[in-house]
Length: 263
Image 1 (spheres, rainbow, N blue to C red):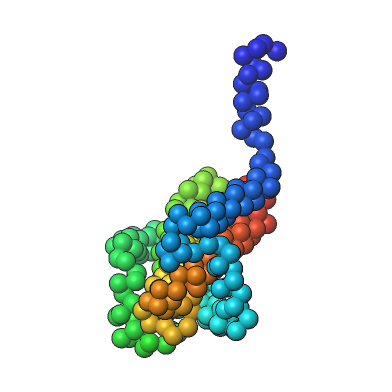
Image 2: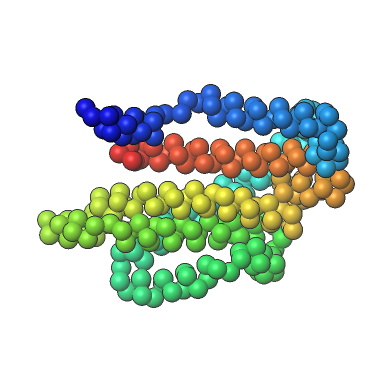
């Protein structure tokens, strides 16, 4: 093997090598240690940036008195229900728009015309229509999830090889089987891309909705302690939101791995 070929082989092997898990752990640990050191040295006042140790103590206090659990359960209820409804309807509508020319011609312009509207701007209107209870919050989350999912599902359906669809129809498959065995598997990578994007959107809408119209929830808790300038407890809420986002992403990755082993 020539020297040039060896160099190319080594570069490919370097790009394909797996990064060990401890590298990510060390990166996060290093960031936390640096954060603690900056706070302990007094470089940044505790009011503006509390130390991780102070945040942990505040979080433990909120956990033991039940405040953190109550707010977390309220937020989880809203986001799970809203995300599930928005994702389910988005996938179904995306499949229909992508598969049917008539629905594509009628529905796609409507979806793309409504999509750019900031969903949180519609919350006051939803409160007027649906009341200040849970329904308005769940609806705004479901609406925010719906659009990224429907657009990615639609794009995934359109990216499926038409020759595969024609072959399935030629061999006598009905519409349902074509969707279930050809279109849906081919569109799944794009569908999961939309689901991951929608997970972040759902968290943003959850926090905004809870800050505007909720007595309980992580967003309401963050706003409350921000108004009181208790930044340790405010940071507890921010870190909980970060962990929720990470958890949702990992769960979706695990489901994607199970459904798409070839990917």
